Amino acid sequence: MVVDDKGNLALIDFGELKGHHAGKGYKHDINSVWQWSSVVLGCTNSEWGSGLPAPKLRIVKNNFLKCMKDKIGADDELVTAMDTALQAAINHDSDQHLRLVYATKFIKQNLPPFKKHFIWSDMDGCLDYDWKKIIGQQSCTAIDGYFKCPQESRPGACYRTSGAWDCWRQGDDFWVGECKDKGYEGACLYENHGKEIKDANEVKSCASLGECSNCKAGSWGACYVKDKSGVPVHNQCFCAATTNSFVVKTLLKHGCETKKINGAEKSYDGLCKLDGFTIPKPGQKLKPIAPVKSVAALSVTQGEKLQCKTRSGAWKGCTVQMVGKARAKVRFDGFSAKFDKWVQLDSGDLKK
Image (tube, rainbow, N blue to C red):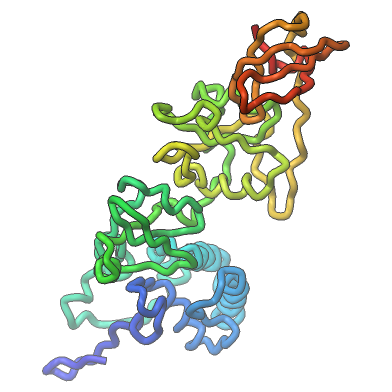
């Protein structure tokens, strides 16, 4: 509380009354709204809690939304806006969505009367609070080596332009100064953290991009790289099968842009969709897509030299060892790859 020389009283800095991410330099005003609204409304099971994992915070969030309905008669517009803002807080999204909350009809009609006695009363305050600019963090993807924190679940890092990075987990976000105190050059954020692809139209097809034709028929999607210089052929696409639900879920959370390419000091540029692409609903498992055999059967003879597709999708020299009905046994060339493999002649895995 502050008082001026005329006896005018003001309440300030509610955010300082509750530690948000203690010691991490990360202040989220929406957490103050969440915490203190619960206290004022008397809903003890809906208070925001420092250090609570996301699954428990989602339960607390739902308790808070119910509390708003029960205690103050919040309408659907306000509940939806608050749900959006609190979910963003759980995801540590830099957009706090407070403007969305304060723009609702319910809030506008129920704001208490007040007098503006201080110059900062004319400021937007937390409604336009952009902590990324204030604390000076950079975009991790603008710094060489940003693939050193390859998981989409890592929101940021203390970085060096050469050498190891200190990747943050569970929303442990640092000010630039804290990273420098630890011997790093600064702090950076992965700006897509917490965001998820929810509309299939957001993703372009691999065919339209001219990418990842080497992925198996029926694959779900693939990570591709535009600049293929220095990238081994078999690593130029990371192909995801519909049966690998963990990978599908990861790539929907912008996992391609921070996924390091094996054998190259770079990451993939983005995700493209293949035959089996669809966005699974919670708890849903995608069904495998049977590959369509539309390739004409090759005519081959024993001892003939061909090109065969490896498991990773790369083409490698091979020799026909035996010819059977609609298939052939081939052996890859090279000392390190001397093993036999049966291949269907109409599979598209052979070419002359």
